[in-house]
Length: 57
Image 1 (cartoon, rainbow, N blue to C red):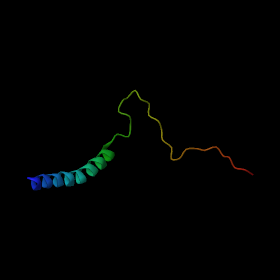
Image 2: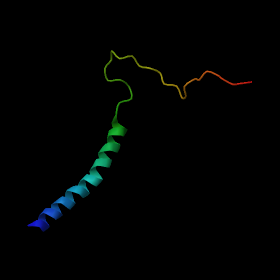
Image 3: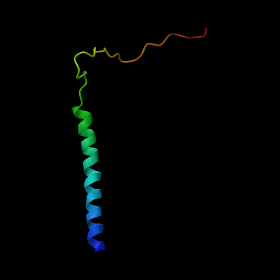
Image 4: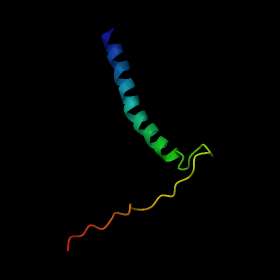
């Protein structure tokens, strides 16, 4: 009785160990870059934020 339960539990964990990272990666690859709602304005992205120069001379 316990052996069948252990086997089922092991199979479930193995499936989850494979399936969850695959689904996470697929979600990252398939997400929208632009807003889905047209009323939300699109903001241009820059490569790096501009910082004020604070050099001590």
